[in-house]
Image 1 (cartoon, one colour):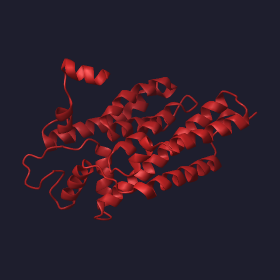
Image 2 (image 1 turned 180 degrees about the vertical axis):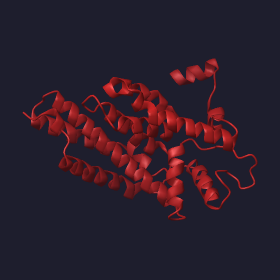
Image 3 (image 1 turned 90 degrees about the vertical axis):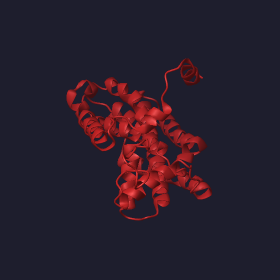
Image 4 (image 1 turned 30 degrees about the vertical axis):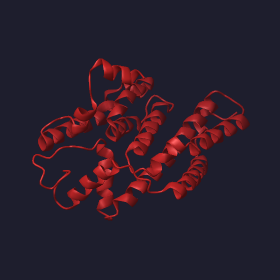
Length: 250
């Protein structure tokens, strides 16, 4: 019987990537550019930055207000805007790749877990590819390829964190970067940070160093540029009343 360390091979990754790309493409071809209105908030910030106005929703905005949720998605849009002015297409590419990464990493996590459980090879193969089909045919997941928002990116970053937190061995070089990128993709991903403690590397200060440095730089940049360590979306969406608690529980 194979060793658990051989569960993931380059050939398996290639097969899963092609399958995920095919399933995502079928959905994408039928629903591409189904953009949410909030996507244009991101596009406006990226376009104004490209025009030299800085990260502001309006060029005459003084002081500027941080009205976007995901710093990582904003960065990817800015990089895309440096190549093309078609930010709608940039958002579609990011969404498509993010969902494919989510499907592949989810399948790899399953493949590793099933092999460590010492299940028969045929059952492991069937279960792994079954998961690919479940993810690849799930409209709630696939919709993130086309809406132009940061949710697809957050799915990929969260799945990467789960993949890194479940890697075997005492050390995982990917765990630290995964912690940072997950938080940068969506602020809610801070709730996933305890996953790192399930891995032996999660008890090392070195693992948390990228998150600490990146978080400090982000908070410092916010304070200097926007005059606050929290984005405006926090004040717009947060609340502490009993009604908010009831809605959250519901």
